[in-house]
Length: 448
Image (tube, rainbow, N blue to C red):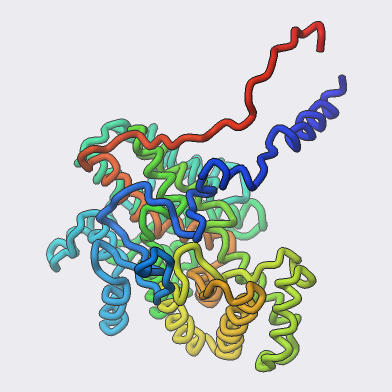
């Protein structure tokens, strides 16, 4: 039999072997995607780290939409971000300390922690060499391979004591920006034929500043760096139920090594339904800028958005990217913060017309989506709606949008890994799947 035909035949058989009727899930009371029938998540764990609030339940147990709130170790996100904006200082390191330890640092602790991160930002020479040698155009894939390689250079890679977990966590948080910057610059050279620049991290710079320095030399403003810093803070943690963090907790529950667990989280975040969604939004935005002649004409925009929802325009998926979220209903607190930041940055960059158009797309997109659904469920802009526009204004390429998400979320991942391996009553996470095929009689090979 032709081998290529065999691949076709095997894949064609999947149409039947993977068929599961949607009604079977309700018949056997199976929560598809670990979601309840009302769309809320199935409660599978407890945590002290992050809390995502998008709805309440009324006296009858039905969901009641509320303004979204996000808490880091009990502190509301806005309470952490507002002082940083007011004082015009960098805060990602402070938030990292909070998420890892459960406590806000004092000045002495914060300075020592910043120095510790800075000391760990440089890469082992062997890692730099291997990044140069790695083939591929996907930075997330290169990041995952580099993380797995760190196992080889770690003197105690399988030690899951608290001290060792914290050491590994700090090293990963510090090294992610360097790996991503190096990987992109090498990709830029090998794939795009551009000059190769390898800039080592500098002392006395924040992680956001160092990343921009390694990416762009000194071609960035203070506001660019502060916006990136706040983006990192806003994306650092989102509870234990988001796909990538849950992946880290599931793998950690087996007591595998840190690098294997974090690489699994990277693989989860890489998916376009998770960390890659901001690229979908910015590409849609560029399309709408071309498709809509008058960026202030609500009627023209509404007609086109409705065509998109009816799968008649743009990529014909029926989606308005960046609108809607699994938990948030009336608002996503991260999008609220980013909307404010995007306005400040757009003013500096002379892109206020685009910013106002993006706000109009948000406004009308929500309205059109709710009308399309028959008004059954409220919707709001999510994190991805404004993040891509901010990255673009800072001058960062799309190839690193999702890696930057990983650069932020590594803080939450490591915090959840430490918790998963240190709370009382921990067990390996092992849900159940019900087999609905039934038993078959075996047919000998000669009779098939």
